[in-house]
Image (cartoon, rainbow, N blue to C red):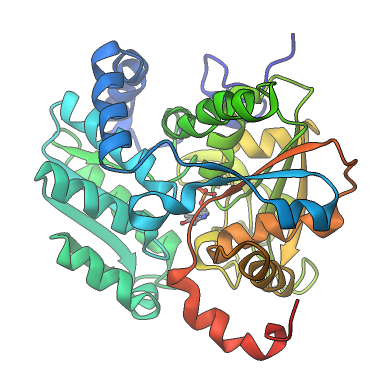
Length: 399
Ligand SMILES: *Cc1c(COP(=O)(O)O)cnc(C)c1O
């Protein structure tokens, strides 16, 4: 049977691998040879699932959205990752990686963050585990994401503003890798999405796979069958999508539909639609699709949603798109905004702008009334209120 899972070389088709500086070979190799045995062990699973339950608030509900179902002519369930502690799915991965770091005897945590959401999740688990934490963040992003910077500091993390390049996510990533090169033995680098050198994409996907593990039994309870007809999610680097599809990836009864950030449109130069607009390159230690010019210089991505403007894409998702296992849509800013207002008015749920890119695909779908659709609401919209308010006049008429 054809498989879309990672192969034993660390690749998804032609994408993936580990392209790291020589000085990190031993560290990455150590992680590669130990991660699977640790995170699949009974002891790890027990600690991980206890924290997911008692600290993060899992299982997250699978909610039948009746008014949205009526509007779109299907049976629509929302997987409510917005209800997790810290407001998104990112906490699942942060808890898992800090437990892994401790089992590997690491004493210091580093991470990079763009919008600040991964930085907050990492700072949160470092407070929980009493571990020193340094978060690299582009100086431009430090200014744009002031509230998250203050949250990280309150949690006890050191936020390090990066002044090189465009002073955004890519520059923060470079600086985090530089730090890792200087402290390979005692430092664990917590990566926030299904990106980076092997084994990170697979590590993050497995830690987030709790999402589809829950969908299975929740659907069995509610629908009498443990698989949906459609799974829908937004993709930045790909972690909430990876978690949503993990246990269904080779089950071709289940159609996978992914929404990336179109920004102002894929022909506008203001876009973060990496799958539609990117080309093969190496970014963040991985061979994947990258937004780059003819000289291989990274093109700064744009999206109204800070969590989706990443110039790469996880290798798993690049392969799913290449093999036509997943349908990928670029959802523009205005479509996402409209979808966020719609969910708020019909169901009383204010989604994160990232999640609104998954919702923004619904008008383009052709469902039959019996289709069971599970759409992951990756996070809550509190952090995006200023953006929503700035566009309120366009949407405040009754939907
Ligand atoms: C970070 C973030 C995303 C994008 O990251 P993925 O790794 O693609 O899931 C999506 N939604 C929310 C709420 C986020 O915070």
